[in-house]
Amino acid sequence: MTDQYAQTREDNRSAGTPAVRWEEPPEGPVLVFLDQTRLPAEEVELVCTDASALVEAIRSLAVRGAPLLGIAGAYGVALAAARGFDVDEAARSLVGARPTAVNLSVGVRRAQSAYQAALARTGDARQAASAALAAARQMHQEDARASARMAGHGLALLDELQPGGGHRILTHCNTGALMSGGEGTAFAVALAAHRAGRLRRLWVDETRPLFQGARLTAYEAARTGMPYTLLTDNAAGSLFAAGEVDAVLIGADRIAADGSVANKVGSYPLAVLARYHHVPFIVVAPVTTVDPDTPNGAAIEIEQRPGYEVTEVVAPQVPVTGAGGGVPVAPLGTQAYNPAFDVTPPELVTAIVTEEGTVSPVTAGALADLCARSRQA
Ligand code: MRU
Image 1 (cartoon, protein in one colour):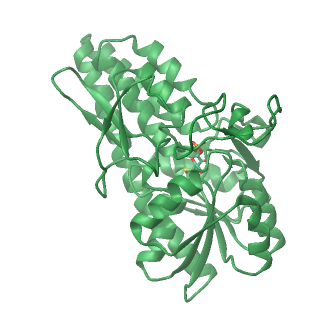
Image 2: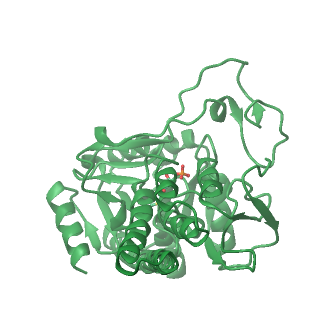
Image 3: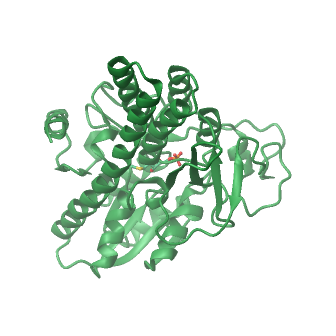
């Protein structure tokens, strides 16, 4: 893959490197990310010098995952402000980069509001830029704290559902430190179980078409020494039938007011399987993922991705030959259905775990109470 949108810096990522860093070299501030499209083959840092580079990085999924999108969006506004670009224009383009994860617009709006308020108060664009950066940094820290709290609440729930531990957890997509200010959402819960000696196995769905499970979750699981096994998405049914799954743990990109959960495509079939096999289906996400302005699942905009992601295998390790940069696996001209996300109705969700606590059963009233509590905290 070519880096048409930004410079890259080739160096090894040491354990614990944050998913995003703000740096201030003499040439001006930059945002540094690990390019998630290149993992696990290469650990390459991506350096964004302006918001349009960040928009491209988000669209290409070099920067991805709901919590990181929120943090990156806030830093993107701060970057535009610090470099003297039109902040409202940058905010508009960042919000439009991907439609489903509500965290992106939450992060952008938060930094933009901080900028506007400081500008109105002081009339000084530099002070306003500092305020936007402070808001982004605060969001980043809050996400790290939220991640740790979700891990605690999630592990307590797992232990309650299955006293004695030995949890065999199935997860989908990638929800770890690569996309968080901390150790992630669902992945952080599995990691907490592992550290407590109570994780028997993490089952990792490969997550077609872009392999976030195989490329990213397996990468993170291997780095942390968790016992994990990769499976194709369509092997999940036989795994449930064999009685090998104690709980499903996934993240979320948007949770509607009624408790409908949009997450990586393939989550809904897992919820159906889980219900049939009487296995808890648990969603782990920060409160910022709950969107009170989206009334139900039908109102969630689902991103449609290019068909070549399905008609070709697009992965960093394979030689580049197809129109989309991958190896073709379907006849030329084949049409593809490629929604990036699907929606799981609340009645299939056993619990939603957030930093403010666990909601179970999942009802509109319980979620509204949770949001109100979080606003007061
Ligand atoms: O298209 P992606 O890779 O950005 O999708 C990410 C997911 O669906 C994650 O599961 C989600 O952001 C979880 S984090 C609470």
